[in-house]
Each structure stands twice: as C-alpha cells, then as structure tokens.
Image (cartoon, rainbow, N blue to C red):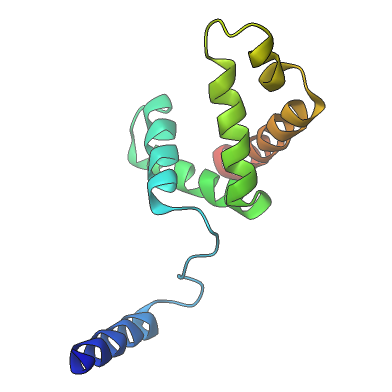
Length: 119
C-alpha cells in the first residue's frame, strides 16, 4: 500500500513538471462549476470553438476577481430570485443591501470578463 502511494505521488510530481508554468489551478472554483459556466456561456454564444475560448477566458477573469465563496453566494441569490411566490421570505434575496451588493459584484466581474474576452 505504501509503495502504491509513493508511486502515485511520484506520478503526480512528474505530471506537474510537464505542465507549463501557471497551468495549475489559479483559483478555488470546483471543476464542475467552471464546466457549467463554460457550457452555459457557449450555449449562449452559438457553441463555436471561438465561444469555447472566450467563455473559458470569461470564467478565468471572473475567478480572478471573485472568490468561489462570493461567486457561489451571488449565484444563490440570483437563483432564489427566480423562485415564484415566497412573499416576504424572498424579499431577503431581492431587497436587502447584502443581496444587491453580492449580485452587483458578480455583474461587475462579468462585465470585466466581457470586455477582456469578447471585445
């Protein structure tokens, strides 16, 4: 068992030496979240190879400006705003300064990503 763990660690070290500088994860976003963002972005941009490059660039910019925790909170607020009904309970996601600030930060990051990656 110990020999296998050592072999795996060695293999991982070898792979890391083959990667170009900066190719490691530069942010704390889970791969699933990055893939979901890129796929949704591509769907909105005609699913082309150029859209893949631009959308990948876009999530990288967003991730450089917002921690995953902040991104996740903003996404949660936006999803909760889509819930029908709820009355006063949903006001927390529509009307509070926290909700507005959280979404505004995400929107600013997305605008920056648009400028850097799509123009």
